[in-house]
Image 1 (cartoon, rainbow, N blue to C red):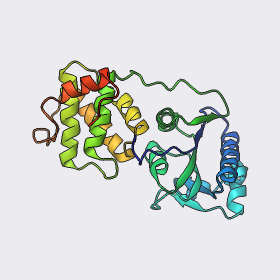
Image 2: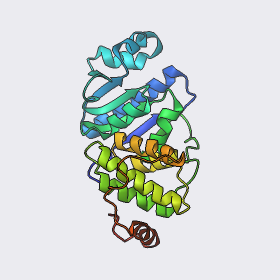
Image 3: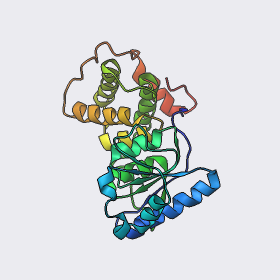
Length: 247
């Protein structure tokens, strides 16, 4: 959909695996991808202190470190170049690693299933170590809502963080949908957004604004938001005819 939404190999270790087995599977996958793509492998960890016990608990990771594989942490500006092994990421840093132009393939060593599975579903990541768990959204998006989110993605822009002006546009669009009787599931909206080219921070804003709209709150900037008066009709037409423009 957007240049920002790149098609790269992605995988994750399924929840419930022994930690040693999970990291070994991720390293094996990463090395295979690196050979296929002609890229280096990089490790991306929460902090250097998280690697203190890898020799005992994660020998495959320790072997990479001993070979001099680059190690990046959440304090760095990017997750590294090439095939990135995200060790025990939270949602925020996993999505940032995914959208980094330096990342050519990405595997997540799952720690908290909630932080990994929405990304895995949205990006169609391959499961490692077992069958794909049921990670469907709690509520499937109505086609009109899906078209609206895609259209709002065009409005807010995908290559810059949402400012107050465009946050108001998101709020106005979601309010229009809610008043027209469409359900707004923040989790499902977020999953759809990250699967359709939204920046990680913008998708987070979408989820946060949706939660507030469901609570009946007004988002600052809604009155001056750059949405046409007939936008709901436009979204409905787009849902009825997928070839319609999204903007």
